[in-house]
Image 1 (cartoon, rainbow, N blue to C red):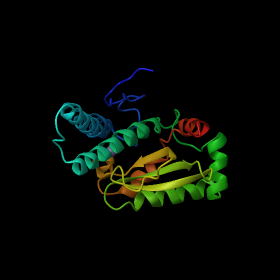
Image 2 (image 1 turned 90 degrees about the horizontal axis):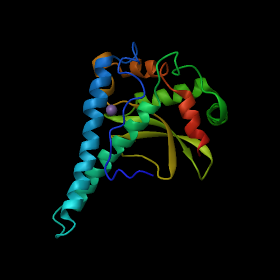
Image 3 (image 1 turned 120 degrees about the vertical axis):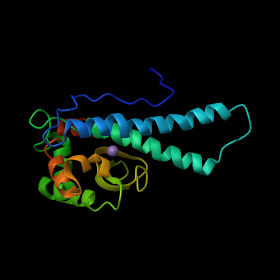
Length: 203
Ligand code: MN
């Protein structure tokens, strides 16, 4: 396996305009090339600082440094997954889940429609910046919903995240202004369920 040693900004699997009309090209460029890139840069800056200080004394504030690292790694991991969770509407995106994930959602939440309602409410009610996530808990063998604050608060350890929705203002403000609810409704048109199901198959 190739070893990167540092975090890398992944390329999108689709063009910047491929998610229109739900997400504009301009928004996607800003979100991926500026916002996501900044988390990659931020995480790597911490690693570089660790590398540089290795030979000397501990010339950093561990509390501040690792709080910062947690934030940036959360940003890198969640955004990388978010892009994988998306696909152009009608071309891999939207519709209903299929396969194992569909059955797991039905069993846990009663129906796909009910899951959508719960997940949307989770996303819409994030205070400030954060994410809604569908994860799988290995201990209970059940899907579970996380309401993540910022990029790293309320993330459950040892659960595999399957689907995420970014509800930071930078994720929608350019296209939807302050109407997060409308953005969350639009999201369902571009969810790549086969990718979510593929991740579910790996648990
Ligand atoms: Mn974002």
